[in-house]
Amino acid sequence: MKRLIFILLFIPLISFSQYTTFIGDESFPSTETLELENKQKDLFVSFIEDNGVIKMLLQTEHIYGYEKPSFNSKINIYLKSGDVITLNRVTYRDYVDEMCYAIYPLSETDVQQITNSDIFSIRYTIDLSYDKLLNRIASNNGYKVSTILKDFVSRFEKTD
Image 1: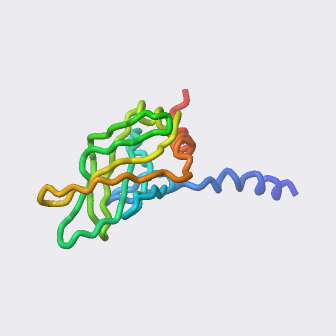
Image 2 (image 1 turned 120 degrees about the vertical axis):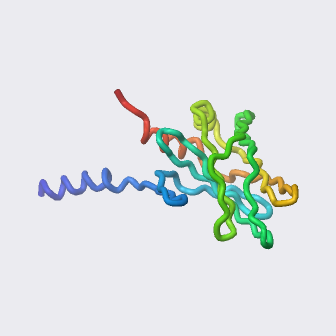
């Protein structure tokens, strides 16, 4: 009977789900993938942890003939509080299976702003060759990004 009670108490500890994202030849702990709505193609957002830095992974489908489209450097994250976070530095871009991928590092201030408010929408640009740009906005329709990111970040916080 004691073993049964121990097993029942231990199961919730080991059943905490953890997501992993594979990029190139590396893997990273991540959040679930969140689908933000856009009129043409939805934007998929997740957060990854890379050597103590929280980063935002963006993915969207884009089919453009023989070209390899990519995310333009700048994105704007509009928060429900009215604040805007501008990210200008892409640390990774790729185009695989008609999906554009980009990774943006977040500062501690960026993470704090998102966890204190919530993402309302994200403005991003798909960069095609020959100076053609497609500007898009994807809206958050129901995800509690603040809670998801706060829970994710707490897994990596150092305790003294």
